[in-house]
Length: 115
Image (cartoon, rainbow, N blue to C red):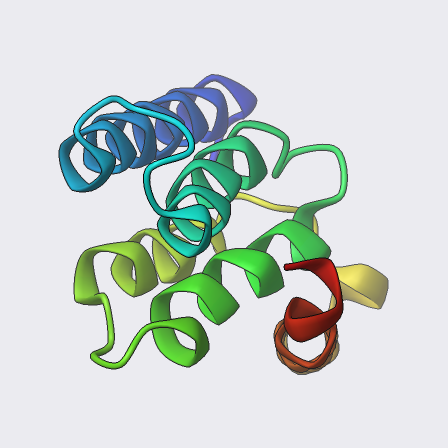
């Protein structure tokens, strides 16, 4: 995948996450702190996925699977859509997924202390 294609996919994912966050929260901050943290945090994580890629993907997975009562399949799908465009640590997908899973569990464990 070329650098241009990776950039295009990252822009699409960040934009889709932003629109979905706006839809879920009604465009408001503060009405529901958990929804704000999950949705807008996922949108921000998608936007910076190229910089700290696998930790950002872990945050999005945490938001999609571990925070709300029902899994958010759109959020989870966008997290998986980011995986082919980010650089793989030491060229292994398994290590990247391990980092993302560990980050998701760490974010979930820290959530009660943040709120």
